View 1 (cartoon, rainbow, N blue to C red):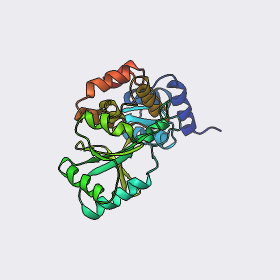
View 2 (cartoon, rainbow, N blue to C red; view 1 turned 90 degrees about the vertical axis):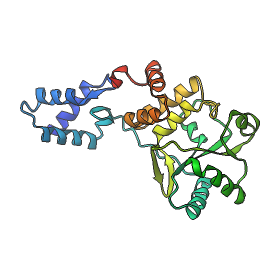
View 3 (cartoon, one colour; view 1 turned 45 degrees about the vertical axis):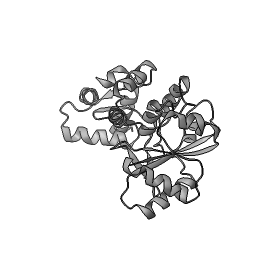
View 4 (tube, rainbow, N blue to C red; view 1 turned 90 degrees about the horizontal axis):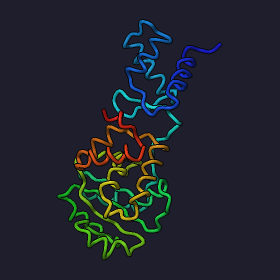
Length: 254
């Protein structure tokens, strides 16, 4: 005999199989009409919890969900160079905010594989110069402070490996893999959208593919992505990009 829990899971899947948006109030109505005519808020919250725990739905922003496709949380492989830099910074500066990531992480999403790699080091603005000399003093090669396009044109584009120090945007979405602070996927996506000159290999149809594959393969927190894009003053542009390329529906931003 099928359990009530299983029946709820099945009706949610069948009802929303052709949509990317499941609004909380619609889900409440579905449960009222089919299972709980007098559904209490506490019971509804528990059913939401169970649907998320069973990987039937995943949240995309407050009050909005979508069907899960057994999508994973993005956890890239931290490189040995990132670990060395992390140890250096931690030994020298105890309270500094920063994160690092490799442009070759984008090979997981892009159609064309880049053969050069840039290790991005996002650092609090007042520490950029200090970190630059810290790396040079410890024999790191091809280290650059990102200040203008000429750095890319004259140096970075010719290197197989480079380290680029850029200013960390306040309240950037960051977490740690092991002890190494890295940007969350939402930050990476916004950064490649905003920094087309720095990430010159990822533009046009390539950036569309990266976004589409990221949204297909991993859980993306839409609120976090939009909030960060707002801090980078690109909120309207990235919303338009997501809608025009059929990555997200317009209704999601209403």
